Image 1 (cartoon, rainbow, N blue to C red):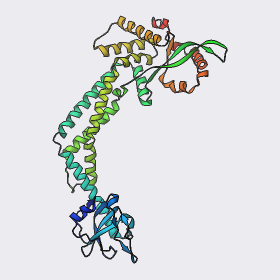
Image 2: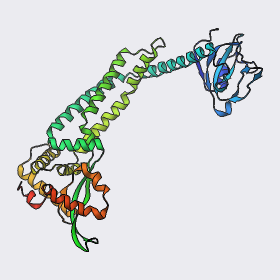
Image 3: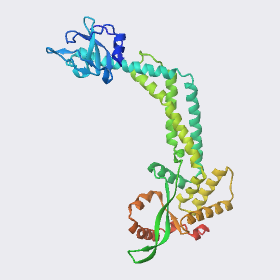
Image 4: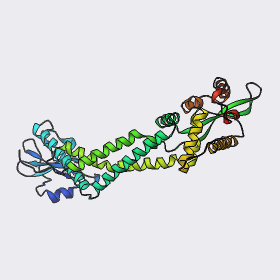
Length: 364
């Protein structure tokens, strides 16, 4: 089989005419004359070309937009449409198709890798990202130890399920048409939406560190050459091209950390734990996270009373109780008419959840 040189990819007929002077649009391409493939072409609709395949006494001569530039044994070259490869069962033809595809893939990898390695700041960016990842991981581990375990368990559940709404049950007096009189009902109310839960995801930060180390190893070993194995260059390229994504993810986690410690976010956390002592511990940690210094027991108690009263004022001064985030799907699936009766029965069984005035005064 004649040597056709390194595979080429053509995007327009003008490119073919400029680089392939042997092109002859009038010649026919037959099994007997087939010598090899020069490259593949993909043209826009207005530049489609006539297929020059001649098989079984007839020529295709239909317009096509993709296929191969074929070399004949006499040196002439012509177009073979992808859909008109009538002798695709020829072993020589299949070998050539595979060669063209492989060489074009390798050339594309060499070009991508060369472009990446030409960036003089790449090594500096990688090492800076690794230092930042390490700092973020240490900060997350310290933060997870600072908050109570019961709160962290709730936050992890909310992060995994995507349920960020903090919901309480509010007790209100309503006219019950079913009973024909006014009665107290418990209604679920959303008091806020937590943000920044991604800032506690240690696993994700560790995975980013692994990806950055893979990129650093690739930087030390990568060579942009067609002589390198294709799979090896693919691994290098993917690892190095992952750096911008890692940087963006680290930025997002840092932003989430700042969002988590905003005051409107911290004021919701105590509603996620059940016991009075846990609530006080959460409020203490929230105040210290916001102020940066140790706070007194008196300030913690005053803050709890103030936050409690703020919620009551926002809902007509009625009593309320915390609602486990894990049960929010059940509450939302119950119709409004039966919801009040269900909540009243649940309240009888779980009165210890009720944040009443006596609870606020520390009788637990």
